[in-house]
Length: 169
Image: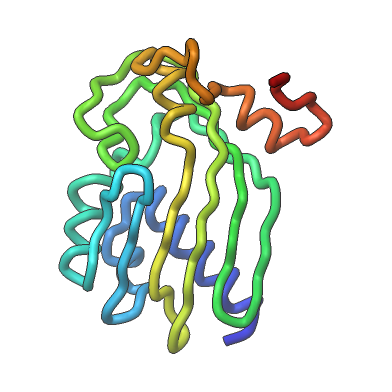
């Protein structure tokens, strides 16, 4: 599969997720996909598990309406795409896959993500999605950063702008 074909397929996949089109989302994936949101361990294994995850926890609640996704970097090789991005939004809706059991707080969130998308036989075989959950919990008021080696939005801002100063130790 060419790099451009992988990029085109992944765009189709994400566009379908955002449009709430479950059938098109699943049609971009292999017959035995898996999806793993690393910090929350929410996702799916196999076509039924991935479909159930998308249907019950992602499609229609991917992010609140004011979401902004800013690409930081993208790496493409012959088997996968790795996207590094900063996502910002106001926590005004339920986001089960990211904040299971947490009611909307109305707080602003900025968080860095790394998304690894694997390909096999011309389709998406898996997605592994990483983010700093402590950073999110600090921003929505569920984790007090005092005395802990965690941060809030400044962590994502430094990913987007590496010239910002590091934390003093």
